[in-house]
Length: 376
Length: 89
Ligand code: SF4
Ligand code: SF4
Image (cartoon, rainbow over all chains, first blue to last red; front, side, top):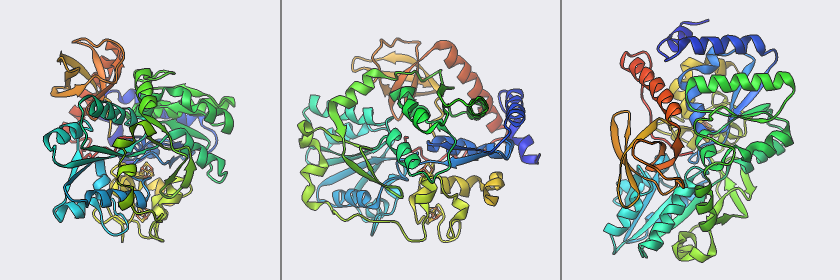
């Protein structure tokens, strides 16, 4: 194929393995397969290593809603902004969250204006901050899928054990199966198979995808993050499709089991319960697709304690932004009219461009390697 | 991105914190999410300061060998490394 292919395959621990996998996939794949990778980490691997370039045209990757930053609706960001604007308050969160624009400003801009807003490496740091600042309110804006929920549970547990009364949680933990279900039950996303998220599955176990594989007749292969992991998972998907099967397979057996991490699941269950509704940015309201603190712990719940100051208006994205269709697997970043023009990573209009795991950001950064996407 | 590089436990303190070695980089993580007993020498998978589960020794050594090769390729400029922040899926 191209020079790119040679570059990519060289330098790997096992170039023979990569080549062999690509050759097998080419040989065995005889009709078009749309594979949704739910997780932003896979999007990153696919784009960074140009996997769609190595694979036959039959394989089309569709990016799913797998990044907690991308799916955060503006009104929740406005909550964070309102909380961070309170006097005597420290707001802490993870990842690229502080860069995402809310309706009027972002946490980053607010920080530049002098508010105490911190982007943490580890959620555990929030306990330290609360202890070091006993005269201040510390609010943790918790984000993430099933991977990070147990970590927030540990924080609540530690806050209780250590008698910390100045720490509050704004919980935005969302769940993968409900989101996938919402996308599939809509009927207009043409997805034949899924790459299952890695770290989510470490916690939940791969059993959570069994209803999806069964209901929608889509193979699900839980995959690790290395390029060879993704290639092998694609091969397994091709083989399932050829055999007319649709089951959950676990390519990432070195870290994932069927049952997952039971202690983590128990911790989550102790501190959290399902929210009736959560609005996903671009996708809309998905019932039972997120968690909140159990009422027993409402003294720690920022949404309850600071209810009065939290804006209640639901807000949609800029009209030009098609993140919603991207998250639903109906469009590619290149289809967006402002992609790479009015919307770039340094000046993002939507969060798919902000988040480093966002589809738009990945296409922007590694787009040259993935010209197949441009034609689509 | 969470590359899921296995980390080796080199020390455990009384607060259930472990010092782990991830391909030569040392850091502290909590073992609060792991039900089984963790001992010095065991391998764990780390995500934002938490050990998420134990990994068998052979699997861990396999992955580490893989990452060493990738790291080498990066040093030789065959793959570029410009990772941003991870968003903790
Ligand atoms: S390029 Fe920007 S505006 Fe367009 S879909 Fe992506 S994030 Fe939204
Ligand atoms: S960037 Fe957007 S589309 Fe990609 S994984 Fe994150 S949320 Fe999903």
